[in-house]
Length: 243
Image (cartoon, rainbow, N blue to C red; front, side, top):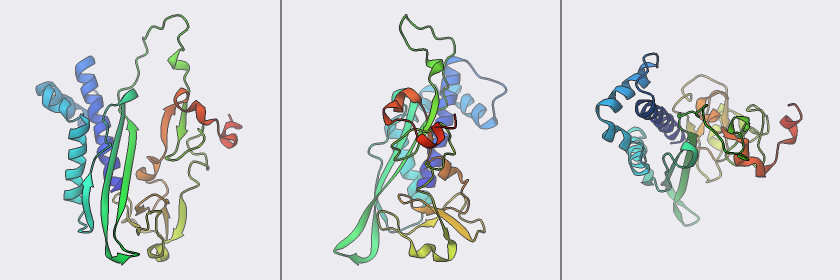
């Protein structure tokens, strides 16, 4: 489910870029094919294409993709409540909740509520020709830093080990013995789980195990933000010293 939400979010970020280009800068000839085709669709049918970037449309689309692609009869009551598209600063947040039916009742529970969250900024860039009034902070000086899903500090280095200290390497032979924070088992990642590996990687709040630490679903665990947005967290003492 996490990998599916990340994939849908990435597509939404690309579509947002296509809408932005088509509406503000015209069709660009040197863009990748996936962007050009999206731009062409936007130019031909602006209203319909742009409607895909509404919160409700994105939520329903994600829900339908989950129902079609994830063949697990234990997943029930999928909801996209909390999904937001193009919120403040162009952030796209996909929030999926569902009930996972247990094969047998455990401590009186017949199912476990699960939540999957994917958040990233749309590919709309930032304008370099903005004019600022006197006393306004120059946004170009606003440093990009990195935060994890549950960060208590911001990090200057995307690969800071404190950002990834929740990622645990375990032998694949014992993956069935591990449970996430909701009590659920880990299933193979839709992106990298089929790869041959003696060691797999898991996260406490995740639902999948990964055959490579560099899986794009894991990389999405860390997001880039402007320092001004998270300065209240304080700087990581480890990677901050190295800059």
